[in-house]
Amino acid sequence: MELFERLTKRAAENRRSIVLPEGTETRNLQAADRILFENLADIILIGNPDEIKTRASELGLCNIDKARIVDPADKDVIDKYAPLFFELRKKKGVSMEDARRFTSNELYLGCLMVKAGDADGMVSGAIHTTGDVLRAAFQVIKTRPGIDTVSGAFLMLLPPDSPFGEDGIMVFADCAVVPDPDARQLAQIAVCAAETAHNVAGIHPRVAILSFSTKGSASHERVDKVIEATKLAHEMAPDLELDGELQTDAAIVPVVAAQKAPQSHVAGHANVLVFPSLEVGNIAYKLVQRLAGVEAVGPLLQGLAAPVSDLSRGCVATDIYKTIIMTANQAIED
Ligand code: ACO
Image 1: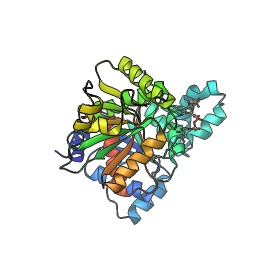
Image 2 (image 1 turned 45 degrees about the vertical axis):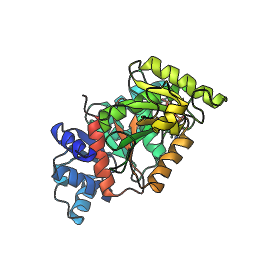
Image 3 (image 1 turned 90 degrees about the horizontal axis):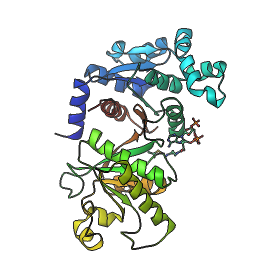
Image 4 (image 1 turned 90 degrees about the vertical axis):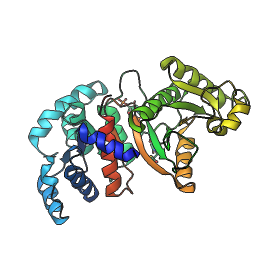
């Protein structure tokens, strides 16, 4: 079964609620309408109710009346969620007045609804920047136990005849969040990427932490970082099939692996590639996407206590529809 077919079926069977803070925006409304028509998730739209209804009617969307609409200007809404924001941020010097102001911001309100358990996940970023979406999620939803660094993975959907990956999928991380991870953060990125591969892509993760060196072929402090990250990741997840430091060819090409890393069980067969910095990860996923015509799905934020997905501002309604399905899947516990 194709990845999206499987994820769509799983979303429908485990109906989760997803909050869309950009609830008055056309592409969000079109995506929400399709999700509701296909009964794949409950949808909460944040925005002025009249504006949402008028826009939906102008767009000829017939299913938006099945969504719950939450008005960020509604005093009752602010009264309900501002105390939670205050509790979460008072140590940072936030006053109750500040908390009420933050709560009336749709991104923070969406995150607060997730934090309060009134929504299972959030999708945003069609009009807000990545930084704005991430900052709200970091401050309110925070990280899950054992993790203090959120990162972003892409599912790379390979051509059907590709010898790489598993079931036509590879996972790349971090391609979206942490500019210059230290060894400890890199280890967390690797462990979280393995979870993304298992929980969302449905593949058995074999993780390579990449470098310009394979098993000591080069010496440099950046190589040392990857060696240390590999050690820490092993300590965090002893049962995980993971290895480093590996060059990309040693990680994914069996004949090169046999030469460069003959002792490694991962080399030659890696399906989760962990990049040593955001520069490499972001550039690599875009190169593979554009030069090889590979569909890149994501970024899937990993390490948060509840799922939040950041959209590209250039996205179309179908991208938001797919992201809602992915986010709903991230909210399903196995
Ligand atoms: N994981 C968890 N928490 C984090 C992380 C992280 N990776 N980064 C920052 N935080 C927390 C901080 O601890 C802090 O929490 P606190 O307020 O409770 O103390 C809060 O978030 C804000 O931290 P800042 O250091 O002020 O973070 P800042 O807002 O400067 O930057 C950001 C965070 C926006 C994510 C930054 O790391 C960034 O810009 N990353 C790159 C994002 C990007 O542009 N990606 C490329 C485009 S996406 C794409 O192409 C797919």
